[in-house]
Length: 69
Image 1 (cartoon, rainbow, N blue to C red):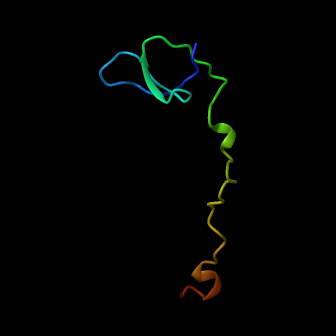
Image 2 (cartoon, rainbow, N blue to C red; image 1 turned 90 degrees about the vertical axis):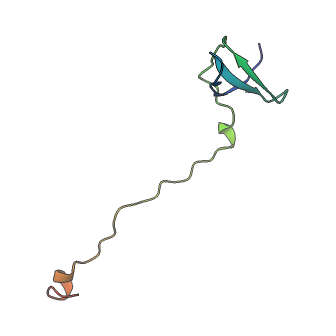
Image 3 (cartoon, rainbow, N blue to C red; image 1 turned 180 degrees about the horizontal axis):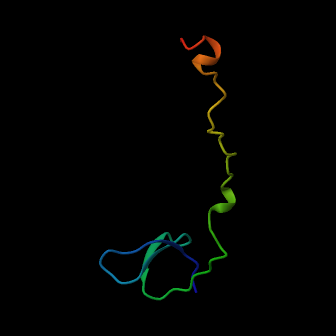
């Protein structure tokens, strides 16, 4: 059995499209066995830390200027 990466669904066939990195070819098939514990390419992925999108504490005009800007 060849290990390939799932890349999508073909438009004209009932089945799946896979890419075989060792032969550099695409395969369309109706029969496949998926191993959901293997995710090729994730070993090179390094997640970035989350960005803090909260609004900083900016004083309102009434707090600093008596209601005026």
